[in-house]
Image 1 (cartoon, rainbow, N blue to C red):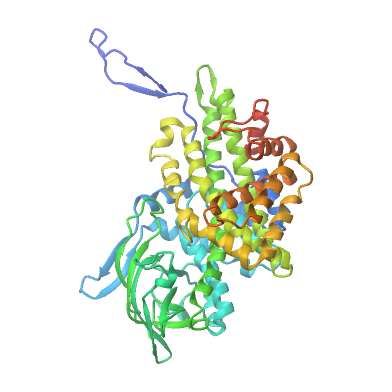
Image 2: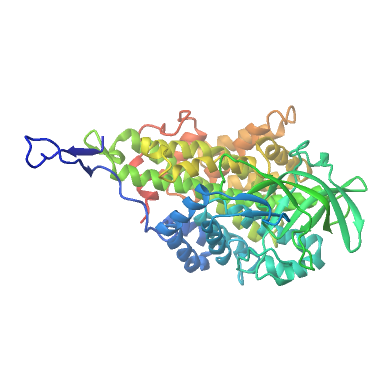
Length: 558
């Protein structure tokens, strides 16, 4: 299909082949040496609109790295040669360590050095959440495994600030330092620290009330005993964990190293053999008289952890949007360079419809992520923005996580067989795409959280509906908004209708954002397809008459 074989004659024979030459034709050049920040007009505009235009220099530098062959090689190596468990040293001492390929450590150093974990807390001016979102959006276009310790470190800072100020005074300077220090030493000696999490147990999963790990008072803290089914990033320096104190679920901070330099009992039973996210370690662990500090009041552990999850879910929204943009960029690059049936793939009407549809979905996801970041930034002073962030976080988390795997598959299919081989980025991107929908609450859990917000904080729904109608008098959106209000007003069978409600809310919100911030052609195509029903069941079914070529040009890297 893409190669021409030539068989020159062997010298001294009657036309026999001496060797075979393979001339490669009709293959796209490698997508490297580009900048996913500076060359993405929509991303730059979204960051500026959210009050984070001041991050342009740092985001451009990170974009240069993310679009480089160096970063692509590091991502491939860190995922191809994943972490391994080392329970004992060669002398028989139990060490419970995780060994990583050097590429992983370099990625961690680059991510933490760029402040992907810390910028929301260390920014000297407004828009810190949006600026940090810009960096993480760019980073997730190449490697996603590092994002796990990045986001937990980011979210852990707020939990300690609010619920354990004495611990925050000790830990926050290390957690917000733009440095990566993998040494297993006490927190006081670290140049930078990372935070992990150990919540779920095998008998309960998302039902944290069923946790059975027990905490007993001890000198200066507590001793935990129990088994955790998932421990994210077990090489970190501290972990937020849940345990029962006097039979009340309570939050604790478990340090990996004790002040005297000894290792806290933190037994790694095995590493999970995951479908994706293979650069990052996830483990089953056992606490065995493991020292811990209490975080928050006894019995308030679940509420404390939900605060952390609110921030990590925000990061999931940003990451999912970035991953979708990565898939779109790869599909566009291939279609513009690959020819079939007499012209470039991107010149065929059927392919144009697919690419244009993907472009609309990606732009809507990006606008959603940065509007959410803006709400987090404004929420400290504006109660309405805080309420919007409260409900918009699970709404956006649910919808973008549901769209990402379907989107990534469609983008991968644009490459044909070239998309289905491990030499390229789509194998890793596709395996990553379901994870965010599972991590920090699967679909049903997230939708029930939306209902909980509506029930306990009705002003959050009011803020969301007000945000939707802010786009003006578009007929598609007006009719859809009225329908959405009726659906929420109907109190019958809310739980069984939860997914439908959240999907409708997310789609209406995205349409509103497209009407306000995309050009009229893109906004009309989005509303006609997503709200008006002039759409099929897969990408590539935009209404007849859509200017697909123009929609594609809008998202092309400049």
